[in-house]
Length: 401
Ligand SMILES: Cc1ncc(COP(=O)(O)O)c(C=O)c1O
Image (cartoon, rainbow, N blue to C red; front, top):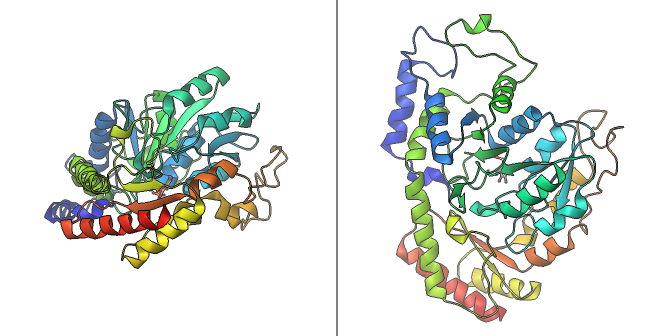
């Protein structure tokens, strides 16, 4: 699953090179950097791969989402529809803009269900943000149709889907903008980092300004003399991350191939079993195979599966218990826990019908997640481990059905 599994001398050399040259800032230092801009190279290489005109490296996937929303002008009074099954960063990015996250149900793809979205659209809705969970694309054609019909932005939280494709096109390049994460759990990692992709030059410029205190970047003058387009903040990526990212990107295909091979071996060994299904994906071939999810007939079957699996020596989780990824568990969201005295959007005069985010909110999501069991798929796995996993899964299936 994580790209650090493939770290070797190449990453060490790339980092050592940056340190030896003593230029860690992505901008500035023109006099000593010998024309070397690693973050810019990383952006160019990834833009090419994603098929997007512009890419902006940032300090995290969370920052990518936030900078993207700020560049679209999202603020108090706006609503963004996204999924109840995602990492909380998707929601926090919206909240940080003072806007309201509206969380739709998932379907058996484990991604946002297009049919759950229409009833959530109001005249305050600005965008729909599907999340490509566990490295597999959401049904983007369906979302594009809805967005076109209602005049909404289609934006992508592709943080878990670096390298994934949808009908031959790269995730991250399918909407107005798409965001990647390179945190330590992702298929390629730079420690902490992210990237945003867009084809829209004006939007890209806003992102570029905003993520670096409004700087209108101009390598031919001193950084201190640059003009400022807006107030912004610091979400810059450093040259260390850029250099690491370039090496990791060169290993992305290998990482995905390995995950796919490992997942295929497991699935072939289990075979087709009536009562056990896989995620209902709109493009199965495009997934990066970072996870294996088995969907069982009901929650009791999932509990029996999990126990038998653990007894057989393999860890496995039931997705409804996943406190990281399921909104049902997010007490801080429900209670609107902020350090500030005023809590926009929770106490915001612009926000109407603020959702309550109660645990009972997402019945369809709950019904699916309580019977879904998940295994992460590593990049580097030996055959003995795969055999152990397969026999544990078979024990789980026997107990479940
Ligand atoms: C769906 C999703 N969105 C956003 C993020 C945030 O990325 P980062 O950890 O790089 O801030 C993550 C990270 O796990 C994620 O899974």
